[in-house]
Amino acid sequence: MKLKTKLQQLQKENKAILAANFYNLETCQGIVKAAKAVNQSIILQLTPASISYMGLKTAVAIARTVSQQENIVSWLHLDHCSEIDLIKSCLDEGFDSVMIDASDKSFDENLSITKKVVELAKSFDVNVEAELGYVSKPESDVEINKFTEPTDAKNFVLQTGVSSLAVAIGSKHGFYKGTPKLDIERLKQIKKLTDVFLVLHGASGIPSEMLQNAIHNGITKVNIATETKDQFMKSLKEIFQNSDEIDLRKIFPFAVNNVQKLIEEKIKIITTSN
Image (cartoon, rainbow, N blue to C red):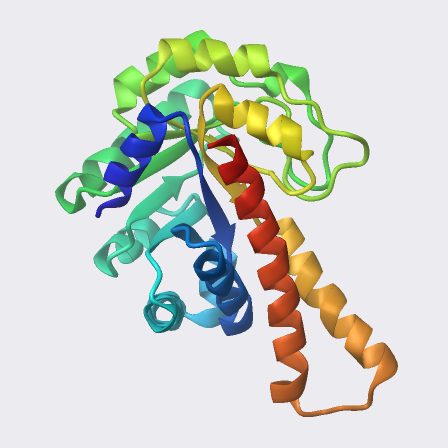
């Protein structure tokens, strides 16, 4: 099944799927094992930085091989990419979905760049995601004037032909300094004016009920990254504090297991809303 078909099903049923970023073999194993444990499909995500770290072909091979070994359905997505050349390379490698992120540009620039990527991806028949508004990065605070405007979303979708739209409704990348607050009324308006798959970035740290409310009101894809990295590294630090073990084959499984537990919990939260 193509990812676009899966997202269409979820959208019709007012459901969502978890999209989790992986950074190496071990984080991928934790994510995939979690999906298998709760009998759910999952989207595996790679950022340009992760691709640079692992190498494109290696990263793709890890995602496909681990999913095959665990016998789960997964899709591969390029997350937050601003380079059209890399998008083309990922399409050539068989990615199921790509994101062009020109959210730091003006509306017109974002629209123009996104339109080019939609055209580029047409022959591949994959999901194309863009971001409108601006989902704040870890070093900045959420600003209301950078939230997605519903009428802008409508025009953007109509003019670009994009199939998925990451919306800025109060989430942010990285950890939150306080309790996050999602603008559900804004989300409702965006859903009312568009027919695309709506994506929530920055789900790490968002309370369960708030996340479920967002799904109920239109979010179809939920992204998680920060908590996965944090869990993996915390697990390693815990071991190193209490052991002089140098065999990574004995150390890494503990971290993989903790990532699995985290992702299982996230999937359960999302599917509870389903």
